[in-house]
Image (cartoon, rainbow, N blue to C red; front, top):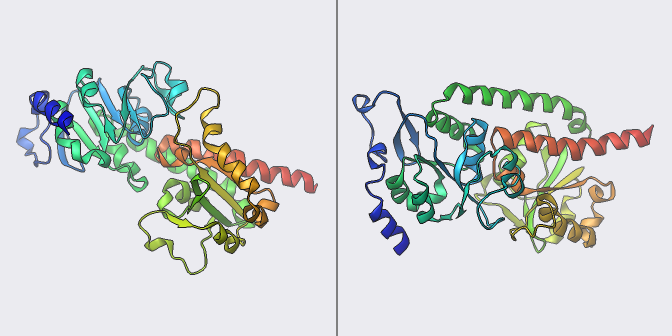
Length: 347
């Protein structure tokens, strides 16, 4: 708390004139080559084209990269990597190959280093609702957009960042392209979704704690529904009224045996050890536990070889245009390749 207060006091004059916080801005106040960008804390005036952009979370890094922007500092959801991102393609999961800078590591998105942010002298900070308590401090350092990281708000988030970068038309093109890609994928999955529509979704960071992959799994579940699959839920449970992921016991798995297929969204919050790639690091511990669990192996989906393991970070961390395409490719590789192999065996 002392850190936040002291840095806020020292930086109250830094770029404060560029950010009007949650005060509505009159049209007469808008300068030439400036845009008023609405966000969760009100409206912020952004002038010129920001060059030194601090990014607090992958859900705002993704749209920035999609629009051609680059970060000078980045904070991920967890500490996969220590030290600065001098080799981002190896250190930032899934998006690193698109990063051409060597961003300063600002810690975690939920508790970023304020000293490090001040030292970068940013002209724009992209944050999420996770940073709401520190918004006044951040906005005193540089114009700050506080954006929802919810999956349903991905297009709003993209449009806000595009407006800040003065690239609104590019956002509309990306959104249209995303809808086209999903429509094409729906056609590719149509036969599989018609033959085996019932899909069980589970989430697990620790095998002892299983969660139902319902609507609270955002893109992880919503994209599958867009592709034509039907999500399986335990009898008597209505996930639509739940506000958070629903824990289920291992015994409950036996009540979900009517699923044609299953996807387990895995996670591993430990720091990468340099030996495993990110996907292996996320998946292997849950895959082994599934293979050793008698109830899991008793499911018809297991017996048919139709249980798939996907890092939950892939579809939960960045649910926008880039994340949608990456997730679609993963689904095609796993689900369609198994379906094609089965057809070859039948013939």
